[in-house]
Length: 82
Image (tube, rainbow, N blue to C red; front, side, top):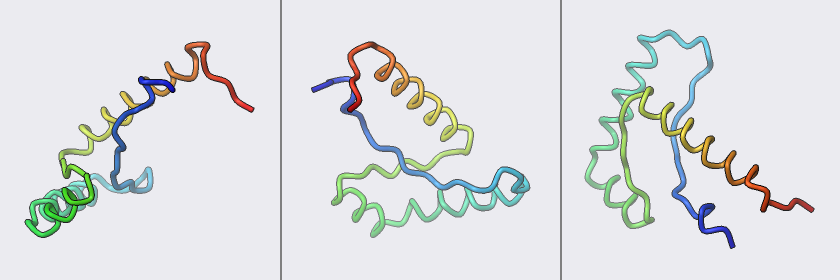
């Protein structure tokens, strides 16, 4: 196996590229509010998921970091594709 490939999953919500900023802010605020719901948090924890929430910029940074890590895994020379 590849120990570096065993990482957490990342889930999020995407919107079309030209979605107006006020709409994105409203959507983000609503999602963060829903993630505070105790029954939802309990269900997520029971399925081994950690509700994080945050800003669109936080999510973009996580995606960029994940992409960088995955790129390193593929380009490290040990990856083989059949």
